[in-house]
Image 1 (cartoon, helix red, strand yellow):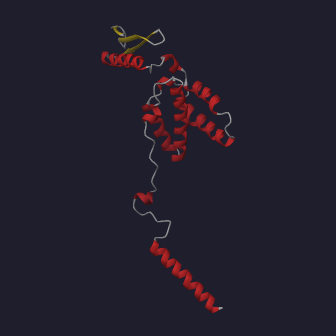
Image 2 (cartoon, rainbow, N blue to C red; image 1 turned 60 degrees about the vertical axis):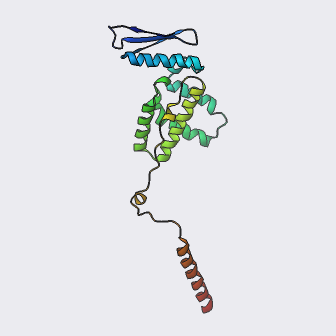
Image 3 (cartoon, rainbow, N blue to C red; image 1 turned 180 degrees about the vertical axis):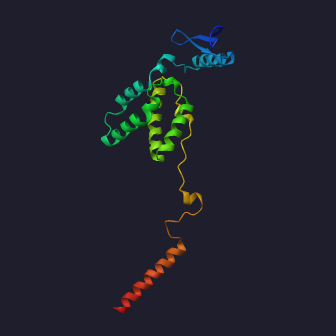
Length: 198
């Protein structure tokens, strides 16, 4: 059973402690007692359901985990698959997530990163980068380093709609049946006229 200790001299005075499934004591400090109780109940609940994750496993930096993931994922992939993925990881994922611990990557952080990326890049680039981040963090969940994948908590950005379509001025790229009928009639008429002149 866990406990909460109050330490008045600390900025976060409420320290929650519990014994993990690894038979070691784990602790975390909070500014509010209510938050400490919620966290403690959640930890005890994961032990009961068998979904408890050792907090130490989530302390690995994203960069280090991405390298481990790449070693497993990349063998057998074609250069056409590897090269764009390597560029996306290096240019778009590592600058934001690289120095962070896996357990500090929240849905809010993912959403901010996604919005920033969408403001500077095409929708296809954003979706490809999001997909790559999702795969890396999904592997972390599977390896029991994270309790959940924060990418799954963030809606993908909507595909942009062309300005003409948004304003109702979009032009169809195909004929309606009536237009096609008139086109066919005109073509057949001109073919008949041309052949009769010969």
